[in-house]
Length: 102
Image (cartoon, rainbow, N blue to C red; front, side, top):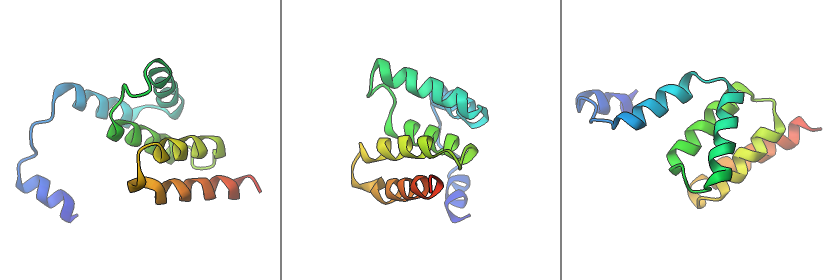
C-alpha cells in the first residue's frame, strides 16, 4: 500500500494517452489476445515494445494461464533478454514450467 500512497499523494503524474490506452487494453484482455498481439509485434520488430510493456503483458497472460508451461517458458525467455534485474523471476517461471510438466 505504501507504493500507492506515494502515487496518490503526488496526484498521479500525467500518463501519456498511448500508455494509458495500452494499460487499459492489456488489463482487460484475454490471454490469447495478449499473446497474439505480443507475438505479432515482436515478430515484426523485436524491440518495438518497451520492456515495461512486455513485462506487464506477459505477467497478465501468465496470471490468467498459470498452468501453461509453454507460456511460462516464453515469458521467462523474454525476461532473460533484458538483463539481470528479472533473472530471478525468469528462473522461477522456468522452475514452475518444469514442475507442471512432471
